[in-house]
Image 1: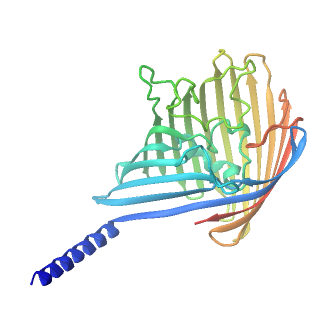
Image 2: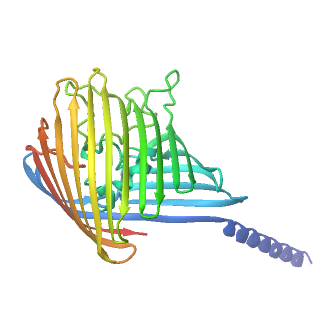
Image 3: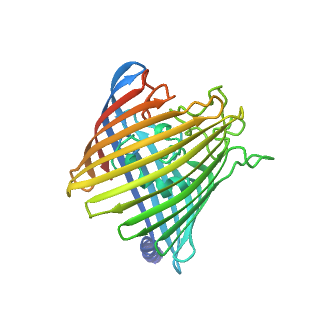
Length: 375
């Protein structure tokens, strides 16, 4: 009898557990996803020498992640996203963190919007990044030094984000706290962006303010470790670090046909250094992309960066041309060929395509062939 009772109880518990699991499965979803991007790169001038290398993350950064939602009823959901960047040529983490790209948890409501907390992108990047040729097809061909963080390299720690969509509009606001006793501005980030999409049109405006990024006195603040990587603007001509970096911009795109799209982007960055000098940079970019057929995308982008240092009056300038072709073997796998040419002008002494070391002349060219797979 005891045996039969125990067996019946065990069966009942099993049915209850199965029922609960079925309910949880119906209300909850978790997705494993990722990108692996690798290529062969040739650069004609790095310190006066050419370089051929197997280069990771040349068409989007390689990553893997988990994202999930739980339906709480009444149009409200709990959500999370964990995303880790890595280099497939070495198998190492990027950004020096387990989940350096994203680590958030939050709540979303169909009416009131979405709030997430953790480590995430700033609002200006989220609003304007899609108008860059580098994001559309051109691999690492972003604005010199990623001086507006649109690529975006630096992510915002200790942050809270609010996002809401209404009509064709989308608003994003992100606050990254310094979390330093007695000083709320030492390594703080504030950003906001407003975008609008209607039919073939898409436009956006945004602002981002960083106070003492990579602060030596507060490494646990909002921006540390991944800011200013290979950037020529992290110090003044006198060697002083950045006290404040403020940025704003606007962009838009128009699909002339389903296959043909044009984009325009303007951003302005100001670096205020600790020696009371500053650098102002304006980036102007135009891009055109065209699907020759459903499997083949070609693109061209031109970037002009105009700068001025207050300390010595120097006016560095850079011209950059991005050309590329992307062939989609399937919805998840594509192969690409991208050429990037940058020329320094004005008072600029050298060229430096993003993620490269500088040239010893006023020009630098990189050609990248690679493959990208999404899962």
